Length: 441
Length: 46
Image (cartoon, rainbow over all chains, first blue to last red; front, side, top):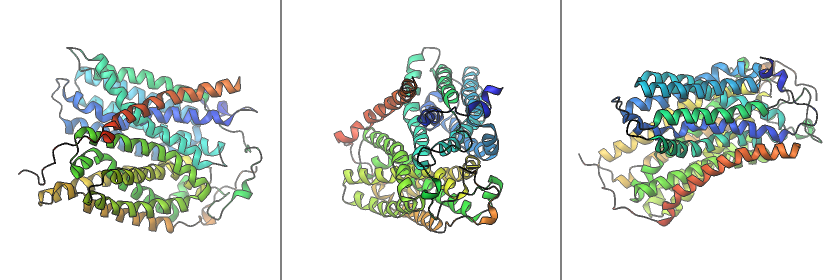
């Protein structure tokens, strides 16, 4: 279909580039729902099918795993096909996955949910996550951090929308015969399809050689930026790629460890109610979302290497402060410290595409980003498990519950130090990896 | 016309995002009202 092709999305003269971020945010806002999927876990165990929490928990895990795999595998196809086709494909997979899952709930067949939301939906997540990145970077060569920060902020925002939306839809459709999960899945599929197709409809790529008015690429080059391009097949063989892989993995491991356990951690450390713990988790989600935009925008002025060094140094120091806030029972300070940590966790996510663009150019930056996202999948295993297992082991060994997280905080600080070392090792990519001359502008 | 399209596009994004932020702010309110539960047990029961 020509309408979906890259050629059909080339912007005409006079197109306003500020129409592209809403397209990217529309897609990210929908697929970010995955972070709110846990609201369906308990209702899924009440469908009468006899499913258990560990069994339904696999749906989320498979989806996140497939996000990483599909982003890595389909990255080159995404670059070749252009943003509209990949956004439409992402919509078909993500919304189709929700519909398959609805059928699975109705027929009480769990593997349909694994295939639907987990595998098919997970592929939609991967395609949707990377599809707008290179487009935004090409439209905003003057502010790549800010532009990709906006899209990835949308993913964080999707979590804020998805969880309460799921709860409200289930409440609406609940009846004597149904817990409302299947109906909620169908409603969400329809709603998200509208938004994702809206994004696909308005997205445009810049014509060859386009640049913002008054912006001269050479004037804004820093030693860590290149005008050359590196293809994805060569990029992942460079030391820079693996340094950034470690940077992302360590940053995410440290942040996700706190984010996943926020409510319980707050309750355990300060003896507060579950409602207050939930409030703490809600506040962190806001900082996670805001940090994505703010810190990645800051990186346009400081440079990517500097801003990551700041995430790691300040982050490690703040992690070491967390046990002290528990010791002096200063809840306000604890909240402030963890909020800054989580904002930098979000910032780390959002700044990475611009860092890749600085080092590898714009040619296949979306595909390279796709391969780097495997670091996220690994981090999703490391972070929560570190916090879970260590705190549980401490409690079983007789350490007071309130102090059980202290050693975990120091381990998180250690992870950030590893990330800092990897970041400091990043150097400009050797010219032998450059495969294509930068386009003339 | 271009300005209108731009405004509509951003509004379509801002409305659901604003709703999500509002929901999270509502959720985080108990944190600022300082409800304390009875202190958690210091060790896990066997």
